[in-house]
Length: 140
Image (tube, rainbow, N blue to C red; front, side, top):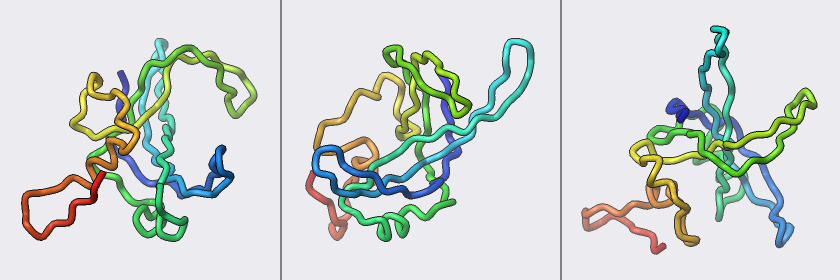
C-alpha cells in the first residue's frame, strides 16, 4: 500500500452542496508519490485529496489552511475500492480499484473505517481535548 507523508495545502476551492445548493470551502491537500515501473522507469505523481471545511467561509479557510503550508501529522494513502472508471486528463478512460484518502500518521490501515457522522478523524485530532483545566474542548 502506498502512503505519502509530506503534504501541503495546495489550494482552497469552493464547491456547491448537492442537497442545498450552498457554497462551502474545500482544502485540496497534495503530496508527491514516487514509483518505478516494471521496466525501471521512475516517475513522480501528484496525489490530491479534498477535505470539506465545514462551518467556515473561504476567507477563514485560507487563514487556517494557507495555500503552500505544510500539513504535519497526516498522510495520503491508497485504499482499495470497488472497480470504477476514471477519465485521465488526456481523455483515456482507466479502470481503477483504488482511491486516495487522508488519515493521521499513526492510524493503521485497519483503523480507517468511516468515522461517526458527527466527526471525522481529522476533526477528532484537531479538537482533541487535553487534561489542562483551561483548555477548550468543543462538544462533538
